[in-house]
Image (cartoon, rainbow, N blue to C red):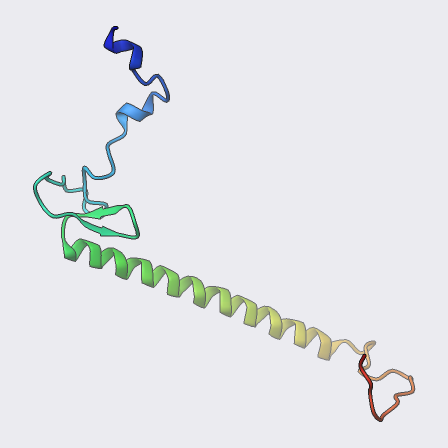
Length: 107
């Protein structure tokens, strides 16, 4: 049998793409095969603890900014909705309807 029979003929970029453990994710420094590799979030390699820590801090700051922007946008939309409700003269909280007070039974 020829060895070419078992050649992977898939995507052409497969062979041009570097293996994920060849370089540090942050600084792109080549990772030596006989040195320590510091991993983060499963399959993200780093050349040092410092590079890994810097990436952790970057990720944490991104997560905080996303949380702040989502909470501030929801708060501003809620306050604008309240302002619209207050300013709408056609909407009464209790229009001319009879309101019964007393015991409520829930089945």
